[in-house]
Image 1 (tube, protein in one colour):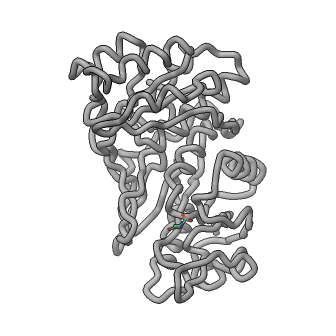
Image 2 (image 1 turned 180 degrees about the vertical axis):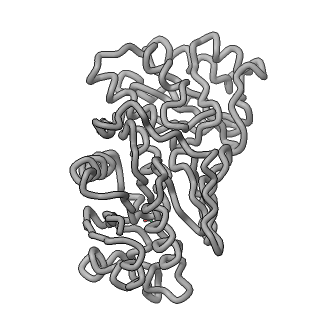
Image 3 (image 1 turned 90 degrees about the vertical axis):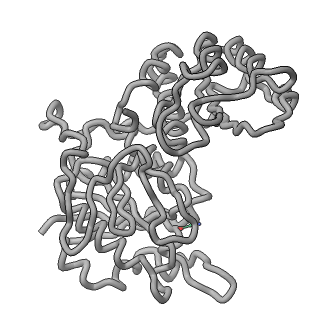
Length: 340
Ligand code: ASP
């Protein structure tokens, strides 16, 4: 029987329903949760690690590092890992973990639920059983298993607050779909690593927090940008419209700000507020000007992948003394299947 480590980090799945909403209840749930589903032990030999117990909106890069360190230390003892996690930032954590592990050769599956396990009609039991099952497979990716679908973690985004079908990968097909049988779509999987068969994967924790994400909207008063001290920031991600479009006329133009970013040696990325398809900066005049200034395109990456990738690349760059050009080059490559 395969050995699976179930890592508890909190989220709605582990919360307790009350009349006026749901609350975390660490004493009750932190390592008891899975015992509510005795059938799990028929699928795998499970150990539980209560790592932390938080609403996922309180998570940050420190928690991603702790997850990476835990998986690294337990890596050889287990065949797969399941992380119980809140849905709100699950796609960020999944993306961060994917960048932090190079040469992964086991499944790392994140799951959670829309209704606490203790709630009537909860989706927790199904998600947890499915995830443990997937963690016993030969998938070699960080994935999200939710509502009978398995998604590449760094392609996923939370799409719904109220639907059991909370996640999607707008620009990538599912890795598996679960019905009466599990339909593994192996053609969509990353190739298992071959270069490190004997050495196992390498882990690189560390994510820089010195980035800023800005959302453009009609009427955005650009003088608000003047008060941002760009000296303390390494990268800016701009959530533009459609294929990467943004205002270029008069007082609303973003061009002066892009020049300021360049003068301050920032890495500047344009992503889209639209979920489907890819940013193409060559399409419109705004994008072409941005390209001339040296702005990067996020392509078809999710916001979650773009944010965590740039945080990770900047931190690694500080350790390895790499230039912004090297970061830019890596940002535009697919490192873990996160962009086409
Ligand atoms: N606020 C919760 C969390 O992200 C939502 C959930 O788990 O569904 O921790």
